[in-house]
Amino acid sequence: MQKVLAIIIITILALFAGWYAFVYYASYSEGTRSGELIKFSNKGVVVKTWEGEISQGISGAQIFSFSVEDKEKEVIKKLEKFQGRYVKLKYKERFAKISWLGDTKYFIIDVVEEESPHFKR
Image (cartoon, rainbow, N blue to C red; front, top):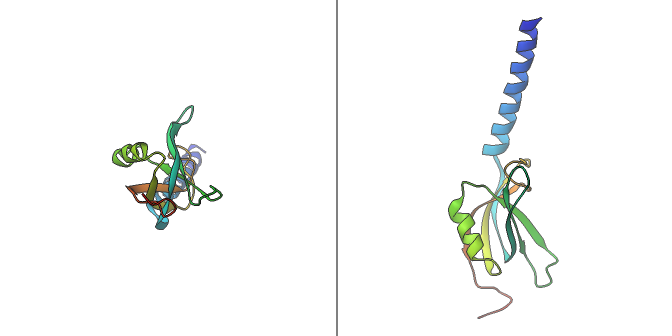
């Protein structure tokens, strides 16, 4: 009986590890989005995650929500600096959300400031 229980537990752990590795390392899509960075914060009670939003239109009708992993220190610094400015985000979309990494499936891997097409300087 103990041997069967041990096999069941090991199988469940192996399935979870396989699922996690697939969701974490395999990307569903990669791309870029541009817009005005309207929100970027470190939120959470038990696990803090970096979350943000860009507005992709003049009226703010199209909002793109994203997450940033803690290991992306340079990206976090740039996003804090570019608050309220027009930015281009390079992201990786995962197959599923991983709650301790972020609230969305979209994880930012690079950010650059751009000139807004709506308000020329």
